Length: 182
Image (cartoon, rainbow, N blue to C red; front, side, top):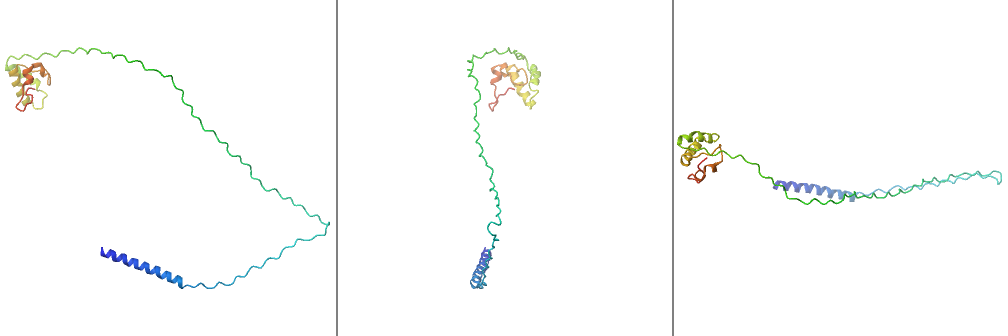
């Protein structure tokens, strides 16, 4: 930091002394007197030849008229284009809305009723199908067998339809308050 300051100070001093010495040089220079300039001698006037009167007719010189610039007419202003509004179509009132037509929903084929289970042996094939797509098949089979044995029912399909087996199947919960039956 200090070296930068010293360097800047040195540069300033060098520039300042050069400017000062240049000003001194300008003051000491005395211009030399200029040599006297002679005025140019005027040229002698040229005399036209004199002729005796009546002997020579003076030729008449026809001076061409000064060239005339062609007359330029200012451009005629073009009228501003007028925008013609597009023809408007007649106003048509939209038809009054009518009540939408409501069609009855298509008839839904009733899902097959839950198969009746009489013993624990009847639960095995039903639970095997119910848990066939489950990611943890053994855990699903264990819960399904318990629910089947208690409620005597297994819902159809691999997922959902729990309401087919009634309140016993839908209300059974685990210790963590999650649905026990798959």
